[in-house]
Structures are given as structure tokens and as C-alpha cells.
Length: 545
Ligand code: GLN
Image (cartoon, rainbow, N blue to C red; front, top):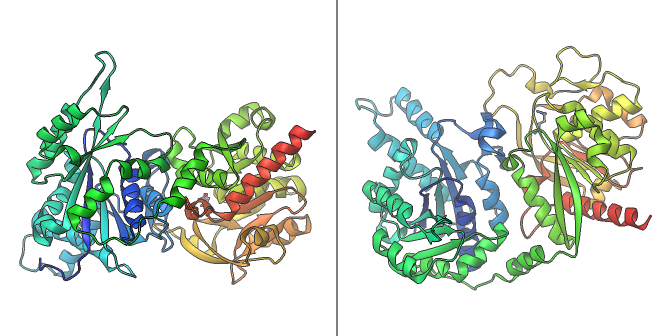
């Protein structure tokens, strides 16, 4: 590979010992820190699984599927990247073994390798390296690309990626490439000791492949002693200053500040010889301070189907952190299994919350519980926010309760239906393939002047991200409207309902898109800000009574 002219530097972040150490948060934090020094950063997440993207995986397998503006279904770490860095990611910022092999096999069929035996090394690794470089061509230029490698070192499926990193470091120039290895320093309670051996072993594994970390970032429950730092350094072949402590923190947003204090930013700048411009973490610090010092607490229920796995609702949870800060409050999320509502009744689970959110979801399980929950919120005028499936449930409930369409339902849950108030988006009807075939990504939407939605956004043209196959059935628009439902957001061609609201209620809003995908730490999404404000108002009115 010829040495490219670009001066873009690369930082590879690998993980060892166990998964779920917060590699995504560490990568996002470092990204934010470099950005705070005026360095232009882009990110790449490589996922060694064979799926082309996570779009076909169950939320139980994968957590949330994060959708970008350009309609890519990506890993949830891209959500952290966007929230921490305040930049838009795209399909270029996430790749998988499935995509890499797909491209190579396609090329082979095209005859691009005519005469050759196609192999993991060099063909798969070449494709991986090409994906590294693809991120560099971002608009506006990139000074540093952070590449986060999913999984842990030693995983069979990760091997081609580590090999590609090894080659890349050699070819692109050691001075332009840096490796950060994230590991765990467990604390053994029985003996009261912190153990460095798992870290030693995982770095050994990495060095076996030919990758020497420049920094060992140690996740730990307690502070690492000077002695332990020395020891980790000695065994991992780095100096003690290159052993960075990543101690547990109460909020993920504190991590950048902790890493800054540990000297990680300076270390990276020096190692990669980066030019900096300014040093601004003031807004971030103020944000973190506000998270830690809320003036009020408000309870909001989330009625969903996958609540045992909170990762399925990652962006929603984070949006509530951002919205809490904007309202000087802490949002306490009350997780309600929609099937529990079916069993116990909505009143039993919703009587002491000040807001109800029904998030996106797929499949029939728990639907009737969600519909009961909407009914309870509507009848008791509790602030209600429906996202995607949540909007669909609100429309079904309204049609059944107020338009006299008792059998109203969604085509997703029953093939033969008298009143399919929610039906396939027309171009979805005949699709057989499941991968990347939903209505995906950013679409424009026009808000009705004077509506609550328009007031919340402060404008009438918006763009939001979607991931769905079903929609409000236009045949029922009249019936719903004549009974008081307002379609406050519509696609510019007037074909698709994007937002609904009930103006008589204190805050009853539904959207077919996913606003949680656009909320950023320092730039909350207006719908979440407004919903939390409504919940706080509801709470204080209730207390006043
Ligand atoms: N299952 C619904 C649909 O496909 C809702 C999707 C969602 O909530 N993301 O339209």
C-alpha cells in the first residue's frame, strides 16, 4: 500500500479481558477531548460479527440499532460518538465482517482478482484497511480517526482486524498510528487486592499478533496504586505514565474529564505530534456539574417490550439525561413491561409517574398493554410521548376509544383486519428481504403552523430519522381528525403522517421518527426537553392539588 499524502492520524482502540468495559465510551470521550483541543476527529466502529449490519438482530442480542442520517443501521456506539462529539455519523463509520467479506466476494465474482487465490491475508485485510481509509475522506477534513474494534483480543472472528491493524501501522507509518488497549483490573474482595495478571495476559495476546499498545487504559473500581502502575507498565512494555486509570464513574459524561485529568489527551497529542487549537471543556464541565446537582426529580415511565435489556433503549435513556439537565432535574425512569400492564392494569403501574413514553418496537407481544397504557395516560391527562410504535399504539387506541372502530389494529399484528388504522407503507408491501429494507434514515417533515410540535421545534421544516415498515393508514385520517386528533407533522408530499398530537391534552405527542437519535449531550432534542418540562409541570400541579 502506498503511503497516502494525507496527514490524518489513526488511533486504534482494542479491548481485552472481558467485553462491556465501555470501549465505546472511552473512544467517544477521547474523541471529545481531542475535539476540545481544536482537532478534527472522525470515528469508525468495526464489528467482527458476520451480520452485514445489526439491523436483523434482536434487541436482546445487540441492544439498540442506531440509525444514521443516510439510513445505515449501525452499532449503538455510533450513538455515543454522535452524542459526545456532536457530529453526524454515516454508513462509513461502522463496518462488519459481513460487509468486508461481502465486498471481497463481490469483487471475486466480478473478476477483480482474476488468476489469484483469494485469501484472508492479503485480500480481506486489504479491504479492512480500505475501510479505515474511507473515513478520512470525510467532508471538511479529518485530523484523527479513532477506530474502535468490537469484541476482545483473542476472539477468532476479530483476528483479521488485528492483523489489518498490524499491517496498517507498518505501512502507514508508526508515527501516524497509535494503539490504546482497554483492559480490566479486577478487585478481589476476599484478599483485598487488585489484580493485574488478566491485563498482562491480554496485552501479551495483543503483542503475539504484533501489536504493541502505546497506552494501557485500565478500567477499575478503585484507584490504581503507583506500585500497580509500575507493574502494569513493566509487564505490558509501556512506561507508567502510559498506564491510564479509567475508574468507574457515576455518569458516562464524567469520563472525558477523568481521562483528561489522567493526562490521556496530552499523551496522545505528543505521541501523534498533533497541532492543537484552544482548550475548551467549559461547556462540558458545566453539563456534568448539572447532572450531579439536579434541583428536582421527576418520574417517567417507559412501557416497552425489551426492558430487561436497557441497551435496547440507550438513546432514549441518554436523551432523558440531556433533557433533565436542560430542566435542572433528574429524570428517574420507571421501566414497565408492557405485559405487566396487561396483567395488573395500567393504573397499578402508572399511578405515580408524571409522564409516559412508549418507545419503538416490533412484533405483537405486549401491544395490548401499551394500548391500555396510552388510554390511561390520555384519560388522566398524564404527559404522553409516543415514538414510532408508540405513535402507532396511540392511533390504535384513539381509533378504538373515540372513533368507534373497536377492532382497529396494525397490520403488523394481524393479517386479516377490519380496520387497519396502521398499515404497511405502500412500497413495503411486497418486500421479501429483511436486511436494510425498512424506511430508514433522515426524511423531511413539515409541521403544521401553530401546532404544539411547531412551537416545540420553533420552526415548521424539520428532518428526523426513521426505522419502520408501517404507517398511519391515510384512509383513516379523516375519521381520526374529525374526532380531534391533529396530524401536526406530515411528509412534504402529504403521503405519510409523521407526527400526531391531541391539543386538548397538556402534552400528548407522537412521532413516527426517532428523535432520540438526534439528541446530543450539549444540544438536547427539543421534544425531549419539552416532554420533561411537561412532566415536571404535571408533577408540581399534582402536588399543589
Ligand atoms: N414495528 C413498527 C413498524 O415497523 C414500529 C417500528 C419502530 O418502532 N421502530 O412500523
